[in-house]
Image 1 (tube, helix red, strand yellow):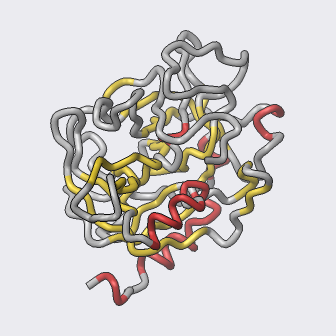
Image 2 (cartoon, rainbow, N blue to C red):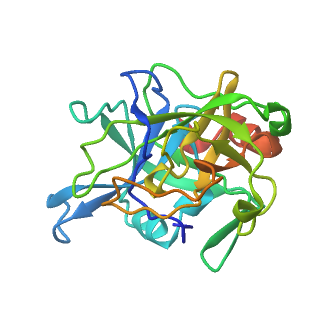
Image 3 (tube, rainbow, N blue to C red):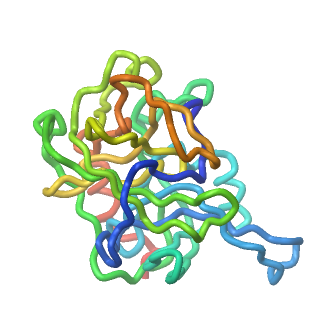
Length: 265
């Protein structure tokens, strides 16, 4: 993934488990792994990123999640969306990804996201109790507001051990250090002062949820973490998450999800 900061397949550190059906629209982007070239030799599904189902066929996520590995999986019909899961007991259902549309302003240089880290992923119909709603309010007006960072993550060898994770924080301006490798517009989520918490790669694309709706997607975090990280020494003053806000691209999102597609029937 983007990160020089953390790798894919990880989880929010310092968060709590989501309650069942608390965020039914939050889904997992996964790759189907096979033991051999034979389709009936499935080993398991590997988590790639997190996303938010905005309609029955459109999932909002981070553009950097659709890297070369994802493209290869899509070409081989091995890219899937998992929904209605509540790990470790309820694995839910998977539905195939059919295509994706990157935000036209997305820029990545030398493996580091620069701007507009947003993608809409099209899939075969998802059946959930309700879908996510994006907030059109200018993100700058939400500084100082409480929000929830939501993301899936696996721990060590198993991708089915950790339920959806939730971290409460405050929307804030990013520090100069956090702005170095990112392009405007971005916003950060400040962690509670007493909590050691951060997002990692598997949380990428997951929603940042304000009481009025989804205000952004996870793009990055400042501190290093890997699949064995249990305790993290955080950089003083760093945020729990670096976020791409959705308000600057709300028209683009709306135009796509409202347009009728021949694959939607």
